[in-house]
Length: 403
Ligand code: CTP
Image (cartoon, protein in one colour):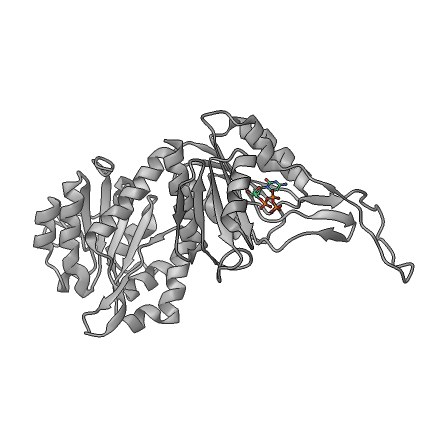
């Protein structure tokens, strides 16, 4: 990681929180790593830390107003937004987070944020009740949906002497988040990645199908994360009610396992990696009735099912040494044994295991709890996280496999 921040252009946005004093440490740590730091501070931020301290540490004049009072120079937020490799807002108050979420561009920090094409990292700092308030949480969710990275505050004693979640993450940890981001980005930049997501529908007749509960959220979060890191993503999606946001995602909508297989087998040879996140039906009805099946008798009805192709195993069979294949295993019992079996059978480089025994993991929720097992048998257990955060962990693992 040593050199990863060297010559990186970082806009540091500082807002009116007592944690603003930590921004001084943050600048020092970033400059020590070779980054160039340009500070933009809100009017309230200046009540907590002086521009003189910040300009001395960053070796750049601090920007706060749209015009410089002395010589009338216009500070261009657009130029600044284009200059940046990353924008980091630390500390970020509830008020600034609210303005970012709603585009209230009444200061230089927010106009810069709105013009910034680079990834944005937000490190909130506030009292525990302000942080827990639905308004703050909804605004943070909104920022996440814009692709911004939220660096969660930690729990501890706050400026109010109350104890709870709201302390800004420590400067060294914030620097580590940026380092991991840029290190992953350097591995994923321009890489071609195929991702399968969602369920498949296997037609019984024109109105009925065999499906499953997969929402596609995990696969879509992976697609957005890979695209944000500079990868060119082909997202092969089963029937889901989700949108894709990033322009680097080429989306192919399919319905059945066979259609998903055809799309995947076509895209894979040109790709550097594939992440097989879809819940593919293992079987389909042998016959698809062309007319709606009628309930004609009182008796039982039998559907004869035939196996679908295993997309993961088919890609594993044609995989080149320089391609990375990632699979998923959703298990209910003997989890590790089943996952390792799939890893080997399908020739995966690593497998992401989730257990339906863990609350908040798997289908139909916004969180997931995973264990990553690689082909050398190394296991990494992760705590329960949002699917967005889980996607980042998986993409970081993919980036190190691509090295
Ligand atoms: N998979 C696939 N094509 C299939 C079935 C599964 O690509 N026809 C992929 C999934 O996307 C996942 C991995 O294989 O990455 C494991 O899926 P899972 O359904 O757990 O595996 P199966 O081999 O079908 O095992 P099981 O007997 O548990 O259903």
